[in-house]
Image (cartoon, rainbow, N blue to C red; front, side):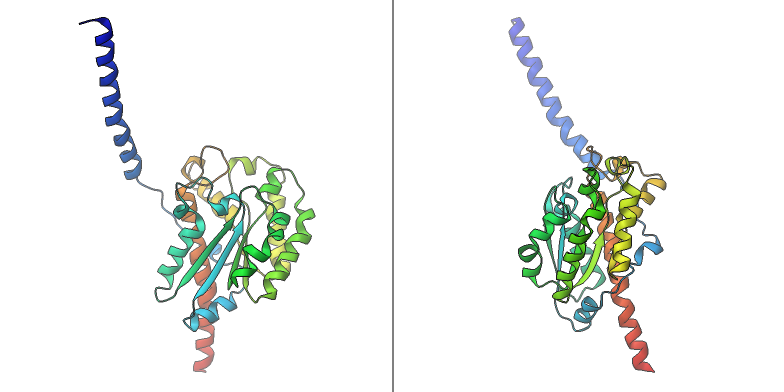
Length: 265
């Protein structure tokens, strides 16, 4: 047997070992225990009403939701489109309202800021006649060191256009991730979006605060973000959707319960 024969056999043995090892490693990752996704009660309050959605659910009419935003709406970092937060939200809402039909349309585009999104509102949002619009914003402006105040006009213009079609609104602030919190203006950005939501009387899902608590509770960033230090992973998107689904359900059920109480009186 020549030296080349021995080398060939060694290469084949190594290849076979790798073929055996890789699936085993993948199986280990798939079966590894996942962190708990607990939702703090104060994060369930969106701060705005979802009257239109509540009425549609009370009448058992289909609900159309449009999620517009940038890469973290599109699902960058997820293993598949089904693992993006809008796709997971559809599952969460169906669990909250089993008899209801929800359509969640993902209109996330990588790299966009509020003015970019506003330019495609007619085709990406209004054309679907939504009952609820989820508007994720702020991250790219922050990463690029743009002043969010300069985007205030675009945001308010977008809110006016959504209101004109009678849809409810929830703003979603940036993610709590290494590349975001490295920016000195990150807290100011979060406060600005909260201020707009309060002034405009629309809902706010505090994604930044939710993810911050994951980290403060002991979860490393690697548990909910990918290696780029910016985008969320499957677990991060799923837990975000779980929080948001519960928050929407809480906002929807509140007026329904109040209406029933008034009827009894």
